Length: 377
Image: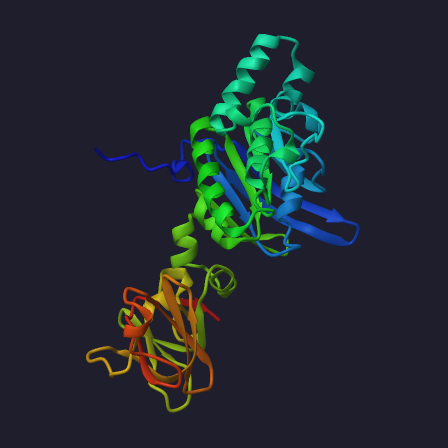
């Protein structure tokens, strides 16, 4: 049975839950958000990704009502939210610090917001129990925040944020305080909870792996602008600029001069070196003809061998100067002709003692003509 693909952004009849229309936000002479237009759909797990100072937290604070746009409008369910105070919006925000009440139990922390809006004790109790089950905290209900782990505190904050059934939940670096292994586990828990509740999640993060893991779509930001908004696989495999290619994951980038030849493009990049052959990708490729380009290729798409491979058009010779052993894979840092470092990554299917490539070895790097992306320089 085929599963329906969740992609409301591709459906012209689907109305976005959130609309940023020409939004600009200035703080004095500084422009934090610059004429930004963006649609986010119901049930999405949407990630705002970028370096510190790119404007992602400002966007979130405007959704929450802590900041107002200088220009443009922000709509939630078709309604301009500018005049609506934060406590009246169908939006909840979960902070990195979790902001739990230390003197209240887990149960009371979750019930806090509900008690402020209702006096129906049975309804409150039923909702708190439901949230405890959802976040697997039932047996910790009577404990205080200091008596549970960081991951459990994170789940309490999440349960409290979801208790009032907001249309939209904003998560500001929610996993920043957790160690790597727990953070990875919690990412999957977040995805599971988001799917079960159907709440729209918007997460702010500078952790690219986190964004790629949890999000239905990712918006890569730089200096208050959207650089690319797409699904994680497209952002990774088909970045639209050197900035995105470089920001997401590990990448080799070689600048050169491209000449179209049929379906391929020949890239001359260093004196006396064989050209690199790549495949232009429409607007993100070499455009109308020859020109300055950047060729980007992921290390896992580069093969490494001690013997020169036969029948490969893209070949680079070099010397292994470093090996990063990452357990499940190894990344080889190879110095090629013009002195630059080119990375190749291999899966560690064999034990360390059985591997044949080591430091100082002369090696050949090879890749197919469709493995990289040609980006305008």
